[in-house]
Image: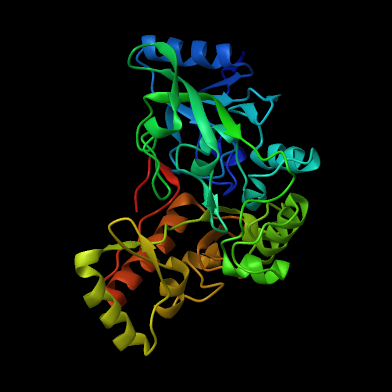
Length: 349
């Protein structure tokens, strides 16, 4: 376990390249180190911020007045159709290795930045797939009981972009067990855009490697694959979740959107209501690709309206100002409230 008394800026550890300093920094390279670091900080009454890949994190300009614990345990072990992966393992490197070994199941989640330990927390998903479909269990350190325990998938309360682990720092993810497909084929292709790219029908299965390449192609076209030279990728990915309108309100909301836009909004079935496309709503509320924020230091991505990007010399407050403008504009025009997907640390919108 490595420690430093320096004041590292969170900007160096987040894909947005934003965020002020932490008061203390610890790098935990094993699960045991991770448990020890959190236990030590808890015993001292010290606030703790767990840092994985920093891809789903927005940190305020004032930084974090506590201990930043870098989750740096890596590696995985395969046992037949199960794979146990350390929480600090880079997610896409793991997916690439699975596909390279002829194993399917996670290929549609290729190219997502960040670490494995973050994926169950918000039930990471893309292109018609979610990690909830493949997760068997999660090993975590329970800060309340001070014990290491295992939660099975049905105990994790998975739903759209959430789980029982989201919104609380009680459970520190140490490792995740996934179920993989040993036939080398993808999961059934459910996302229309991906099916068109692959030239197959919805529900078809293809070699996992083909699905991975198609997903990466689509993500690159939207600025969703990290590239230090491309400011469209200086983001936290999709900044807003797709809103779910409760069933009792859906008819009126959809009628309002149709009246304003002159076209029906794309809609998808969801538990308890109807899911709408945040990107579609944002664009039709007047916020197109590349829409600028304060001083042009931030903007919507020039490739995808769901990503808010740092154009090189922004502050977190610049980004939040743009987020507020977009959120309020969509609500004023359509009566739909957008909610941020990233974790906000020492800042609010």
